[in-house]
Length: 238
Image 1 (cartoon, one colour):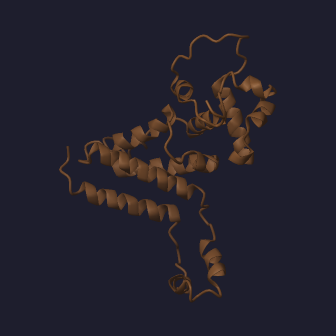
Image 2 (cartoon, rainbow, N blue to C red):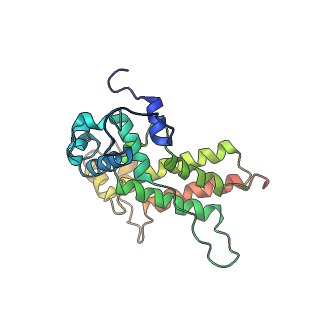
Image 3 (spheres, rainbow, N blue to C red):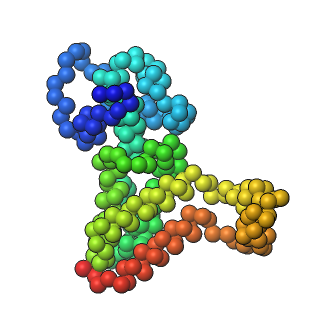
């Protein structure tokens, strides 16, 4: 196997707990979970660019070669770290009162905000969660909750999975943007002196400020859920 290439079989075993078979050598003193948590600590402090097997080994007071007994390489380590950082999907919100139903919309609103929080705790996870890859059991539990929340709405299985993908993308993109990002001021500084190239932006940025602006996360999430609701109204309930 070439350097940097993912050991897919070993990664599946690490993420999903498939038996790896007996291993020779001294009794293990660490575990993949311990190595993943050490990697999370490094990435939280230094980002993915600062994450190396050597750096993780140093935090665990072991040699770099010792880590390879537990994780075959950096790519597999990042996959383990992402699943550990996301954690198990939290349960749906408690209904408002006896006999009340949280409803799919309240569940997905809560779900998205909690996922944004997970990404904000671990900014490196935003980049790690992009692209085709093998998800772990924790990550799949988040998808499970979306699919379960939409059961009985009339949406097809494919559509329910698409909703999960759409909300993950929104959460990941918005996690890197703080509630008060100063976006308008930053854009205004860039557009100043270039109004002829960006006339629509220049005009928009001269509009009177909104007295109580809606946070970007709330605005986008509400529009997404409105669109899903509009689609659901066209389907007979199952």
